[in-house]
Image: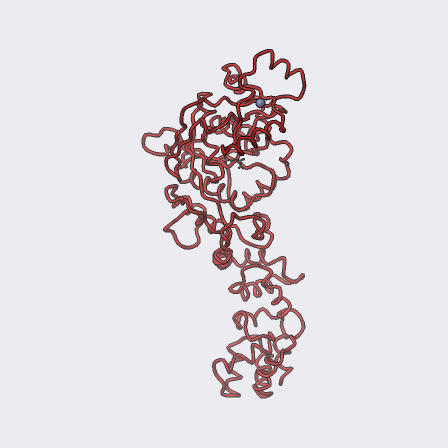
Amino acid sequence: MDPTAPAAVGDTRPVVTRFAPSPSGELHLGNARTALFNLLLARHAGGRFLLRVEDTDRERSQESYTRALMDELRWLGIEWDAGPDREDARGPYRQSGRAALYEQYFARLVREDKVYPCYCTPLELEASRRAQLSAGRPPRYAGTCSTLSGAERARREAEGPKPTWRFRVPRGTRVEFVDFVHGPQGALTDDIGDFVIRRADGSAAFFFSNAVDDAGMGVTRVLRGEDHLTNTPRQLLILEALGLPAPRYGHVSLIVGADGAPLSKRHGAVSVREYRERGYLPAALTNHLFRLGHSSALHGLLTLEEMARGFDPQHLGRAPSRFDEQQLHVWQKDTVHHLSTEAARAWLAPVLPPGLSEREASAFVIAMRPNLVLPSDARPWVEIVFGGPPALEPAAEAVVRSAGSGYFAAAAAAAREGADLPAIAGAVRAATGRKGAELYMPLRVALTGLAHGPELAPLLKAMPAGKACERLARFA
Ligand code: GLU
Ligand code: ZN
């Protein structure tokens, strides 16, 4: 793929997208979808996909989360062209390593008087916020420190705590942009208070580092969650103040749970790690995420390459998209169905009894897999197939009794020759004249203790030698 191919006729910049997680928690499904969409957008256009770790918030960021994020992304098949472990000239790809760059841009804003120090205490800010709210106005920074005299600044500086630095938002204009999901957007600058771009500890605040990094890394498309839509005007103001190129922004609707509320811990598992640990497969997750908020005419289980070919940012929806575990199960079953026997064995390995030969494990996997969503679904069957003879519930007992001992004598004799269902059923049919369910049900019940379950022929093959015969002979 040529990473320099133009995104569209007339646009000479190659498409560069990025995923920019803050390593303050686990990768959750919403972020995984954002990462996936950015990967697909870049691949679709023959562009580049970057991973940038936004760890300027020292208190909340943890290196272990960064490592876990990268691990979960890779597991999903989401590979980046440059990132913290694949540095290039546009890096470093960890914001914690970019302080000197922020310093340069910051110094320029200071020189041009586009920022000013703010000495307001949290208490003062809160009081101002309350006053505005009670006057029925939306709260924003009142501009208290924007007009301090040199002497006043010097006094506050000497007094104590280090100031934050605020961006001087130009008055009386509008910021306009076209969101590639939501269409034309605008905000009055008078509705945006002067906002902090540098924290008191000297670190760059989100609006600032995020915007200048997109420019510095050559990012041309920012596809992110709708929760960032209202941040965009501020980021555009910063880029404009610095004369930096702006990316095109698109904001995808949030993922909601079955109850319509934004997906959260309340809905159960939300982190990719949890799904992975429960035995969901990457293709099942990516196929479900691909269809959340992105309408596609492509049906069936797709590879990431196929998704990239079919990805269309114009098909990103504005309505909240519903995460549906039932739908995920459909993709999961489809994915399991397509696994090689070897891959399926590895997938089921956590629940298989120790010491099985490869042949035994394969026979079990082949018998079970059409019935499984997760490996744990196979647990009861491990007991049924490899454990002692199953105890029968009264209803099951009745089925077996009504078949009679002649039925089972014929079955056991045939089973002694091998666990082959057609041969066993043939012998029983010849001995009893039974057919259909009448013929098969007593066999199933005697062998498994249950009236339902996976197909009987492969299940029989999975039973250790002699077990089937022993179970049938019990009723002869
Ligand atoms: N670090 C921000 C987040 O995780 C990035 C937002 C963006 O993609 O611009 O929400
Ligand atoms: Zn202030």
